[in-house]
Length: 106
Image (cartoon, rainbow, N blue to C red; front, side, top):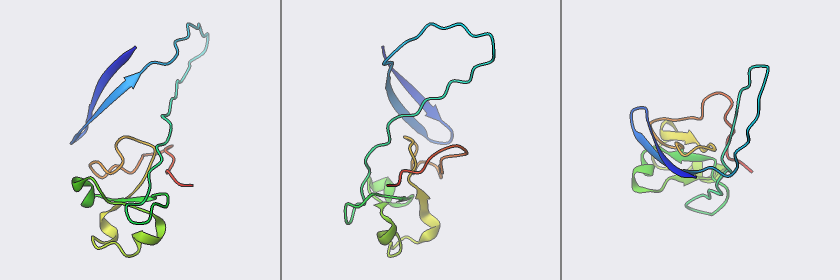
């Protein structure tokens, strides 16, 4: 099954999702279901090393992914940088991943 979802918390993130597997189960205890998408391979816009930061100013121009080394020389300044996390909201509306998220680093 394929479906679309719009998440909006100050700015909209549109997701295209697909159910890969469905399981029917019965539980006697409370269950918490967790899922995580596969982390995308995001590279630095300048040197193609793995990106660890995104500039919240440059992301408006569909750029701004930076590796650790290129972060130090970025023109917009440290206050504009956010961590690259395994989320479609990376770089959106000051999103930093929240508790339990994992940064996208190698």
